[in-house]
Length: 88
Image (cartoon, rainbow, N blue to C red; front, side, top):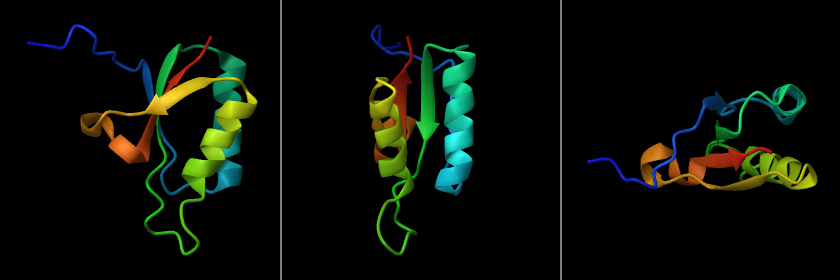
């Protein structure tokens, strides 16, 4: 039986492996288009970055600067490596 509180993202965007510049272009498009209310963004955990997690922090800061509500995904949806983003 499905969890009655479970929410399915309308769109999933995988930024894992992208540069911050590439990710910014994708995020700008997401905010400009306003097609979706719930998006899952896969950012990875930063385990392969020499200086720690760059992309997850970049995306979180971008979302904060655009007043987007977000939280970490549930473990089955990506856990630490993914964000549930709720757009107005």
